[in-house]
Amino acid sequence: MTLVILEKAHIESVLVGNDTVQKMYINGEWVESESKYTREIINPANGEVIGVVTEGSVEDAKKAIAAAKQAFYKNGWMNSKARDRAELLLKISNKLEERKEEFAYLDTLNNGKTVRESIADVEDAVNQLRYYAGMATKPHGQTYDVPDDIQAMVVREAIGVVGIIVPWNYPLVMANQKIAAALAAGCTVLVKPAQQTPLSVIRLFEIIDEVGFPPGVVNLVLGSGSKVGAEIVANPDVDKVSFTGGTDTGIKLMKSAADTVKKISLELGGKSPNIVFADADFESAVDYALFAIFANQGQVCSAGSRLVLEENLYETFVPELVKRAKLIKVGPGWEKGVEMGPLVSEDHMNNVLNYIEIGKKEGATLLCGGNRIVEGDLEKGYYVEPTIFGDTTPNMRIVQEEIFGPVLVIQTFKTEEEAIELANGTAFGLAGAVFTQDGAKAQRVIRQLRAGITWINTYHPTFNEAPWGGYKQSGIGRDLGTYGFEEYLEIKQININLKVEPSGFFEGK
Image (cartoon, one colour):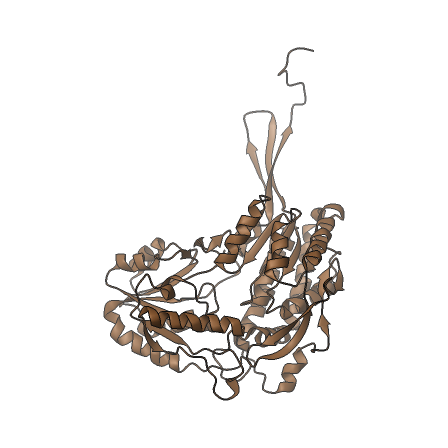
């Protein structure tokens, strides 16, 4: 379903207003930060302020952690009934579905992505809640036939207090998928959205407040990663942290979590290869090569940011790819016909533009794009042209490092073995794809990719039922599916003596 906002009045109707400071949600109450500081939220399409939020502090994080601990251990959430948790998740899903357009527009205004992408995100979030509502009643145990008069069994129990730290590129859906799984498992949670994009998560908590969770079960803390995020990871009363974001930050969090031997799952960066063989369906391969890198302005951890192209296809494939890239309509995500919006912030735009300059200096050939777009109404927004580099070498920074923007680098190969070597030639291992009409070759190559999420003759489709996560420096653990559910459960062994009598281990009395 494609929706379009054409009038400023429609845009403003989604927003709270700059004269109202939006609050955090701690222990069942909406509260301002102890610091009394606030942060302006910017629309990246035009640089305008679209909201003001309270800026959380370390003390606020500690209050939220204490509330979550109290709710789990003393107020009985750890013994809550799975059916009751499922019903609460279903209530959230129904209310979110009723307000789908509102949430989609809000993410577009705050993040910059097109409305059609935001609509898909909200629909995903609704389905995640319903999926995990079903999962809540499904965790199973095991019993063992052991060589003694003992009944041995395993049960799964909620891990406890969970800290959730989410990025700015998918504000609603990534927060939601972690919240849904953790609550379904019986945990209490505190959520820290990215500083740039908190608006849809704040509004999700309005729904959470409406459906009636006990105080302290679900908490929202705003603020910086360096203060609030660091406290969540370091605090010994947090039993588990689930983080999605950059690899450098993930490494720091992992080191901090080690101090308390805290369980942690990390979904980090990527530099994912999209391998196209000469026998691939030409039109499909070109189409998906564009979609792989330019969806969400390239601000996707699993983006196909490296096109690994069979050499004898280069002369026909690349000109068509460049031609199509130049035709991508860039503009505000709410306008009719727009296919790619702005980057999330001015700082991030400048970082992407810096990488483009690095690519030029390294000797790569700029085939198209490479500039900030400042014409007409786009002058005040954070727009970068769809950009493609050719003539790259494996050791270039633009080939090895995650740019997280609309920048594609092309590598070429002659043999299947060389394609695999190039594909696996970075520190990352999040995603990858193979395009070929040779089914056996597709299977051979995909099995050799050191990546957690892979595709054959497509790119980007993902499903809530399947696990999401990567190899190598792309992270540890998984989100989504049953694997994501298990991340929030502990495994307990129970042994029951069926023959109650003295053991006789010590003979003296």
